[in-house]
Image 1 (tube, rainbow, N blue to C red):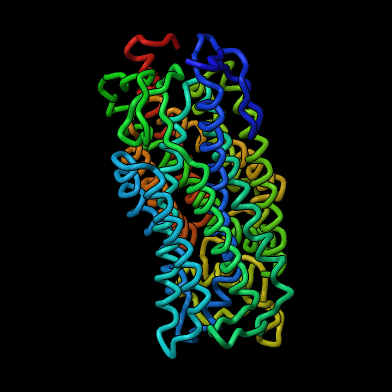
Image 2: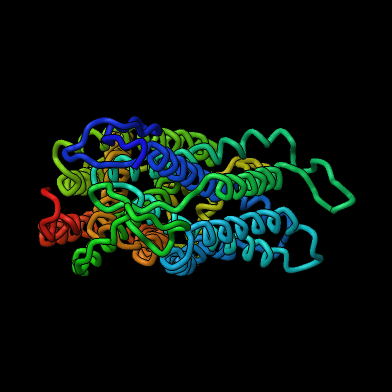
Length: 518
């Protein structure tokens, strides 16, 4: 074999170069470069998928109102949820596909679906009626396209050794976080175009502040397809880094090894799915509640809530990137299981700090009170206020804790210092739990094709993003933050207990069968 070299782990954030391992691995220079070029293309794919989700989040509601006056807040909830529903359905399907066919196929098809979804979103204003349903379909299709997350993670897990795995998973999560951060930034950059914009009459395309972001996303999707076709190659290595033979391979080599045999620990698989579900659930709860909570507790106007919470969420994204870098280094010293346990404890502390204490109460919003009954306004209508101008009806809207929420009268205020401390802690704990769940999952599954399993893990996360907002909206509206955050703390305690029960089972397949020392 020409060009043999000893490979190793020396992994900067996005540049993986040879170094030293605990064992010697023979790998050609050409194979090594091809393997990491392919993995980096999937880093880009994950980034663009996240951008495609978040690039229109700030404008969905005003665009929906503009194209269809019959759309209400309940329908907006379906539009937002359709993305996660689509991803939840598609992830196992794309994962299964990637197990038996070259990974290029599901990747290209899924990205093409996303491109088509973005084009449909740009044209939802054209039909004479039922425009809101076209938007619903567009967001659902975009979610289906995002089902390729399972393929991206399964490919990366299969193309890296145990020593490389945590770093590679951290890079994927970092690219995902950057996409969520930069998507709204791109949207803001196009705001100067305005609502009217210009119209390309030949193809009836209206280019304005609502459609330009999705057109950019569609263009980047086409570019992504070209790069996948040109650069991505099928690679699979075992936990030690030796190249393995697999049905996905385009070419076979006498140097390739068969995938090692061994039964996957299904108890560990189910447990990690539950852990991942809870991690996504609690962050979905936090994202949903942050706007109404700050408006109730600190009497922020809608304009202030949009600005301040936008800054907070952007800061959390930056914090997550820093955490991903730190976890890569820390995992080599104390291991992924201990880090996951620490992340859950930090999340619990964060939500515990949010519990209301003391004798100071929030300012009450007395205006617009018609009776003492519980209102039939949906929680979604409260959140939708963030998209409305505070002066749109000619008068400044009242601020404070809404009196028709009975708990406002007896629940102490959550002090700003409490809130900010909690934000920092949750911003540390969530990315740790997210990354460690994926990393441990890929190691428990071993070098076998992981597409279906990764599909189920992605689906569990999508389900959490659907159920989290529903749970917190109902509990918060009826019983307030004390009950809401107490229940979340209880869920986290149960999750920590589950982790302690299965702690010894969360080990790599090769370690479990004694092929590699932990």
